[in-house]
Image (tube, rainbow, N blue to C red; front, side, top):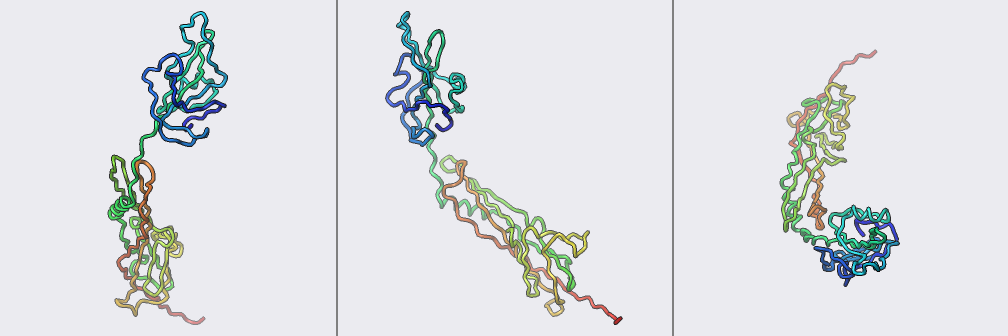
Amino acid sequence: MRGSVLLASAAVCLLAASSPAKAGAGTVFGWQQPDEGTSVETDDGEVEIGVWIEVDVPGALDPAPNPADPSRPPCYFRQGSPTELDAWLDNGYVVAPNPDEVYVFKLCETDDQTQLVTFWVYRPAPPPQPPPPTFKETTRLRNEAWGQLAIPEPTTLTAPAEIAIVQLPTYVWVSNADRTPVSDTVTTTLDGHELSLTVTASPRRLGFLRIDMGDGNTLWCDADDVVAFDHSRDPLDQPSDCFHYYRQASVNQPDLRYQVALTAFWEVSVVCVFNGGSCANPPPAVPTQALAAQPHPIGVAEIQALASPG
Protein backbone atom coordinates (compact mmCIF):
# COMPACT_ATOMS: atom_id res chain seq x y z
CA MET A 1 0.00 0.00 0.00
CA ARG A 2 1.25 3.47 -0.72
CA GLY A 3 2.19 5.22 2.49
CA SER A 4 2.39 1.90 4.34
CA VAL A 5 5.09 -0.72 4.06
CA LEU A 6 3.94 -4.11 5.27
CA LEU A 7 6.94 -6.21 6.31
CA ALA A 8 5.19 -9.51 6.95
CA SER A 9 3.36 -12.19 5.05
CA ALA A 10 -0.02 -10.71 5.90
CA ALA A 11 -3.19 -11.54 4.04
CA VAL A 12 -4.40 -8.37 2.33
CA CYS A 13 -7.84 -8.36 0.78
CA LEU A 14 -10.58 -5.96 -0.16
CA LEU A 15 -13.53 -5.94 2.20
CA ALA A 16 -16.43 -5.85 -0.20
CA ALA A 17 -19.82 -6.86 1.15
CA SER A 18 -18.91 -7.08 4.82
CA SER A 19 -17.48 -4.66 7.35
CA PRO A 20 -16.18 -4.95 10.93
CA ALA A 21 -19.54 -3.83 12.26
CA LYS A 22 -21.36 -6.45 10.21
CA ALA A 23 -18.86 -9.28 10.50
CA GLY A 24 -18.90 -9.63 14.29
CA ALA A 25 -20.22 -8.26 17.55
CA GLY A 26 -19.60 -4.72 18.57
CA THR A 27 -20.05 -1.35 16.88
CA VAL A 28 -17.67 1.18 15.43
CA PHE A 29 -19.35 4.48 16.09
CA GLY A 30 -19.31 6.98 13.24
CA TRP A 31 -17.92 4.48 10.80
CA GLN A 32 -19.61 3.76 7.50
CA GLN A 33 -18.43 1.71 4.59
CA PRO A 34 -17.62 4.09 1.72
CA ASP A 35 -18.25 3.58 -1.96
CA GLU A 36 -15.53 2.05 -4.05
CA GLY A 37 -13.04 4.35 -5.71
CA THR A 38 -10.44 3.90 -8.43
CA SER A 39 -7.92 1.09 -8.89
CA VAL A 40 -4.23 1.64 -8.18
CA GLU A 41 -1.19 -0.59 -8.50
CA THR A 42 0.65 -1.27 -5.24
CA ASP A 43 3.49 -3.51 -4.11
CA ASP A 44 0.88 -6.10 -3.16
CA GLY A 45 -1.02 -5.93 -6.44
CA GLU A 46 -4.05 -3.95 -7.46
CA VAL A 47 -6.24 -2.51 -4.73
CA GLU A 48 -9.02 0.01 -4.63
CA ILE A 49 -8.67 3.51 -3.25
CA GLY A 50 -11.82 4.38 -1.36
CA VAL A 51 -12.55 0.90 0.03
CA TRP A 52 -11.62 -0.74 3.27
CA ILE A 53 -8.54 -2.96 3.21
CA GLU A 54 -8.52 -5.85 5.65
CA VAL A 55 -5.20 -7.05 7.08
CA ASP A 56 -4.95 -10.18 9.23
CA VAL A 57 -2.25 -10.08 11.90
CA PRO A 58 0.01 -13.17 11.54
CA GLY A 59 -0.37 -15.65 14.41
CA ALA A 60 -3.47 -13.95 15.86
CA LEU A 61 -6.66 -16.02 15.99
CA ASP A 62 -10.19 -15.32 17.12
CA PRO A 63 -10.61 -16.88 20.59
CA ALA A 64 -13.41 -19.26 21.44
CA PRO A 65 -16.42 -17.82 23.34
CA ASN A 66 -16.09 -17.68 27.11
CA PRO A 67 -18.20 -20.60 28.54
CA ALA A 68 -18.63 -18.76 31.83
CA ASP A 69 -20.22 -15.78 30.09
CA PRO A 70 -21.38 -16.79 26.60
CA SER A 71 -23.33 -13.56 26.24
CA ARG A 72 -20.16 -11.51 26.36
CA PRO A 73 -18.40 -11.48 22.97
CA PRO A 74 -14.67 -12.04 23.23
CA CYS A 75 -13.96 -9.57 20.42
CA TYR A 76 -15.00 -6.02 19.72
CA PHE A 77 -14.16 -3.26 17.29
CA ARG A 78 -12.98 0.31 17.67
CA GLN A 79 -11.20 3.02 15.75
CA GLY A 80 -7.52 3.65 16.38
CA SER A 81 -4.49 5.63 15.25
CA PRO A 82 -1.26 4.72 13.40
CA THR A 83 0.65 5.12 16.67
CA GLU A 84 -1.60 2.58 18.41
CA LEU A 85 -1.24 0.24 15.44
CA ASP A 86 2.56 0.34 15.70
CA ALA A 87 2.31 -0.52 19.39
CA TRP A 88 -0.13 -3.41 18.80
CA LEU A 89 1.88 -4.97 15.99
CA ASP A 90 5.09 -5.04 18.01
CA ASN A 91 7.31 -4.62 14.94
CA GLY A 92 5.34 -7.19 12.97
CA TYR A 93 4.67 -4.42 10.44
CA VAL A 94 5.99 -0.98 9.74
CA VAL A 95 3.12 1.40 9.04
CA ALA A 96 3.97 4.94 8.03
CA PRO A 97 1.65 7.37 9.84
CA ASN A 98 -0.83 8.93 7.47
CA PRO A 99 -3.32 11.46 8.87
CA ASP A 100 -5.61 10.86 5.88
CA GLU A 101 -6.14 7.19 6.77
CA VAL A 102 -8.69 5.74 9.19
CA TYR A 103 -7.95 2.56 11.20
CA VAL A 104 -10.41 0.11 12.71
CA PHE A 105 -9.14 -2.56 15.12
CA LYS A 106 -10.65 -5.95 15.93
CA LEU A 107 -9.57 -6.61 19.51
CA CYS A 108 -10.07 -9.93 21.31
CA GLU A 109 -9.69 -10.68 25.01
CA THR A 110 -8.01 -13.92 26.04
CA ASP A 111 -6.67 -14.83 29.49
CA ASP A 112 -7.17 -11.29 30.74
CA GLN A 113 -5.16 -9.97 27.77
CA THR A 114 -6.31 -7.94 24.81
CA GLN A 115 -4.96 -8.98 21.42
CA LEU A 116 -5.18 -7.30 18.03
CA VAL A 117 -6.47 -9.92 15.59
CA THR A 118 -7.36 -7.95 12.49
CA PHE A 119 -7.35 -4.34 11.46
CA TRP A 120 -8.88 -2.40 8.60
CA VAL A 121 -7.43 0.61 6.85
CA TYR A 122 -9.51 3.10 4.94
CA ARG A 123 -7.61 5.39 2.61
CA PRO A 124 -9.94 8.06 1.23
CA ALA A 125 -9.83 8.55 -2.51
CA PRO A 126 -7.83 11.65 -3.48
CA PRO A 127 -9.87 14.63 -4.62
CA PRO A 128 -10.38 14.82 -8.36
CA GLN A 129 -7.64 16.71 -10.14
CA PRO A 130 -8.60 19.82 -12.07
CA PRO A 131 -8.28 19.67 -15.85
CA PRO A 132 -4.86 20.94 -16.92
CA PRO A 133 -4.63 24.33 -18.61
CA THR A 134 -4.72 24.13 -22.37
CA PHE A 135 -1.80 24.88 -24.64
CA LYS A 136 -3.56 28.07 -25.65
CA GLU A 137 -3.86 29.19 -22.01
CA THR A 138 -0.21 28.52 -21.13
CA THR A 139 0.96 30.18 -24.35
CA ARG A 140 -1.13 33.26 -23.61
CA LEU A 141 0.40 33.48 -20.13
CA ARG A 142 3.88 32.95 -21.56
CA ASN A 143 3.39 35.82 -23.97
CA GLU A 144 2.19 38.04 -21.15
CA ALA A 145 5.24 37.28 -18.99
CA TRP A 146 7.58 37.56 -21.94
CA GLY A 147 6.12 40.95 -22.85
CA GLN A 148 6.84 42.23 -19.33
CA LEU A 149 10.42 40.95 -19.32
CA ALA A 150 12.84 43.87 -19.27
CA ILE A 151 16.01 42.57 -20.92
CA PRO A 152 18.53 45.42 -20.75
CA GLU A 153 19.71 47.00 -23.99
CA PRO A 154 23.50 46.82 -23.91
CA THR A 155 25.86 49.77 -23.90
CA THR A 156 29.28 49.17 -25.42
CA LEU A 157 32.24 49.87 -23.16
CA THR A 158 35.83 49.85 -24.39
CA ALA A 159 39.32 50.36 -23.03
CA PRO A 160 40.77 52.60 -24.28
CA ALA A 161 37.51 54.49 -24.23
CA GLU A 162 38.05 56.83 -27.21
CA ILE A 163 41.47 56.44 -28.83
CA ALA A 164 43.00 53.00 -29.27
CA ILE A 165 46.50 52.23 -30.46
CA VAL A 166 47.47 49.96 -33.31
CA GLN A 167 49.01 46.64 -32.18
CA LEU A 168 47.79 47.07 -28.60
CA PRO A 169 44.71 45.27 -27.29
CA THR A 170 41.36 47.05 -27.26
CA TYR A 171 39.02 45.51 -24.68
CA VAL A 172 35.24 45.40 -25.08
CA TRP A 173 32.60 44.58 -22.47
CA VAL A 174 29.19 45.55 -21.07
CA SER A 175 28.32 46.62 -17.54
CA ASN A 176 27.20 44.21 -14.82
CA ALA A 177 23.63 45.51 -15.15
CA ASP A 178 23.70 44.67 -18.87
CA ARG A 179 24.57 41.02 -18.20
CA THR A 180 22.51 40.22 -15.09
CA PRO A 181 19.68 37.66 -15.56
CA VAL A 182 16.16 39.07 -15.36
CA SER A 183 12.91 37.27 -14.56
CA ASP A 184 9.17 37.89 -14.49
CA THR A 185 6.26 35.78 -13.23
CA VAL A 186 2.61 35.97 -14.22
CA THR A 187 -0.02 34.18 -12.15
CA THR A 188 -3.68 33.48 -12.78
CA THR A 189 -6.40 31.17 -11.39
CA LEU A 190 -8.21 28.41 -13.26
CA ASP A 191 -11.13 26.74 -11.51
CA GLY A 192 -9.73 27.82 -8.15
CA HIS A 193 -6.24 26.46 -8.88
CA GLU A 194 -3.15 28.59 -9.42
CA LEU A 195 -1.39 28.70 -12.79
CA SER A 196 1.92 30.54 -12.81
CA LEU A 197 4.48 31.02 -15.54
CA THR A 198 7.99 32.34 -14.97
CA VAL A 199 10.15 33.61 -17.80
CA THR A 200 13.89 34.11 -17.13
CA ALA A 201 16.40 35.63 -19.54
CA SER A 202 20.12 34.96 -19.05
CA PRO A 203 23.18 35.90 -21.10
CA ARG A 204 24.01 33.11 -23.54
CA ARG A 205 26.92 31.24 -22.02
CA LEU A 206 28.69 30.62 -25.34
CA GLY A 207 28.73 33.50 -27.79
CA PHE A 208 27.12 36.10 -25.54
CA LEU A 209 28.52 39.08 -27.47
CA ARG A 210 29.05 39.48 -31.18
CA ILE A 211 31.16 42.56 -31.81
CA ASP A 212 31.82 44.06 -35.23
CA MET A 213 35.00 46.01 -34.55
CA GLY A 214 34.46 48.25 -37.60
CA ASP A 215 37.64 47.20 -39.44
CA GLY A 216 36.14 44.13 -41.05
CA ASN A 217 36.78 41.82 -38.09
CA THR A 218 34.14 40.25 -35.83
CA LEU A 219 34.83 39.35 -32.21
CA TRP A 220 32.79 36.68 -30.35
CA CYS A 221 32.93 36.68 -26.55
CA ASP A 222 31.47 34.12 -24.14
CA ALA A 223 29.60 35.30 -21.06
CA ASP A 224 32.44 34.32 -18.71
CA ASP A 225 34.91 36.40 -20.73
CA VAL A 226 32.95 39.64 -20.54
CA VAL A 227 34.85 41.23 -17.67
CA ALA A 228 35.37 44.93 -17.05
CA PHE A 229 38.79 46.37 -17.73
CA ASP A 230 40.90 46.56 -14.57
CA HIS A 231 42.77 49.87 -14.62
CA SER A 232 44.98 48.75 -11.76
CA ARG A 233 46.56 46.03 -13.92
CA ASP A 234 48.80 46.04 -16.94
CA PRO A 235 46.85 46.32 -20.22
CA LEU A 236 48.52 43.11 -21.38
CA ASP A 237 47.56 41.28 -18.15
CA GLN A 238 43.77 41.52 -17.90
CA PRO A 239 41.22 38.94 -16.67
CA SER A 240 39.16 39.39 -19.85
CA ASP A 241 39.62 37.49 -23.11
CA CYS A 242 37.32 39.84 -24.97
CA PHE A 243 39.79 42.06 -26.85
CA HIS A 244 40.90 42.92 -30.39
CA TYR A 245 44.10 44.14 -32.02
CA TYR A 246 43.58 46.87 -34.58
CA ARG A 247 46.14 46.60 -37.38
CA GLN A 248 45.38 49.87 -39.13
CA ALA A 249 44.65 53.38 -37.97
CA SER A 250 41.20 54.84 -38.53
CA VAL A 251 42.41 57.92 -40.48
CA ASN A 252 40.57 56.79 -43.62
CA GLN A 253 37.25 56.19 -41.84
CA PRO A 254 34.33 58.65 -41.69
CA ASP A 255 34.86 60.97 -38.74
CA LEU A 256 38.31 59.33 -38.39
CA ARG A 257 36.78 56.56 -36.27
CA TYR A 258 35.73 52.93 -36.47
CA GLN A 259 32.14 52.14 -35.51
CA VAL A 260 31.97 49.28 -33.02
CA ALA A 261 28.64 47.43 -33.38
CA LEU A 262 27.81 45.14 -30.42
CA THR A 263 24.97 42.61 -30.17
CA ALA A 264 24.11 40.72 -26.96
CA PHE A 265 22.35 37.33 -27.11
CA TRP A 266 20.04 36.18 -24.32
CA GLU A 267 18.57 32.73 -23.71
CA VAL A 268 15.05 32.60 -22.28
CA SER A 269 13.76 29.76 -20.09
CA VAL A 270 10.08 29.17 -19.30
CA VAL A 271 8.77 27.38 -16.18
CA CYS A 272 5.04 26.60 -16.08
CA VAL A 273 3.45 25.42 -12.80
CA PHE A 274 -0.19 24.44 -12.32
CA ASN A 275 -1.70 23.19 -9.07
CA GLY A 276 1.78 22.71 -7.59
CA GLY A 277 3.19 20.62 -10.46
CA SER A 278 4.55 21.02 -13.95
CA CYS A 279 2.06 21.99 -16.63
CA ALA A 280 0.78 19.15 -18.77
CA ASN A 281 0.58 21.49 -21.77
CA PRO A 282 3.65 23.73 -21.45
CA PRO A 283 3.97 26.68 -23.82
CA PRO A 284 6.49 26.72 -26.67
CA ALA A 285 10.06 27.80 -26.01
CA VAL A 286 11.08 31.41 -26.43
CA PRO A 287 13.72 31.95 -29.14
CA THR A 288 17.10 33.46 -28.34
CA GLN A 289 16.84 37.21 -28.04
CA ALA A 290 19.37 39.51 -29.80
CA LEU A 291 19.72 43.08 -28.54
CA ALA A 292 21.92 45.55 -30.40
CA ALA A 293 23.78 48.43 -28.79
CA GLN A 294 24.10 51.86 -30.26
CA PRO A 295 27.24 52.12 -32.47
CA HIS A 296 30.28 53.03 -30.44
CA PRO A 297 32.86 55.20 -32.25
CA ILE A 298 36.50 54.65 -31.44
CA GLY A 299 39.56 56.25 -33.02
CA VAL A 300 42.64 54.17 -33.69
CA ALA A 301 46.03 55.87 -33.95
CA GLU A 302 49.52 54.79 -34.81
CA ILE A 303 52.52 55.71 -32.71
CA GLN A 304 55.34 57.03 -34.92
CA ALA A 305 58.87 56.60 -33.67
CA LEU A 306 62.27 57.43 -35.05
CA ALA A 307 64.95 54.82 -34.96
CA SER A 308 68.60 55.16 -35.80
CA PRO A 309 70.78 52.31 -37.02
CA GLY A 310 73.14 50.92 -34.55
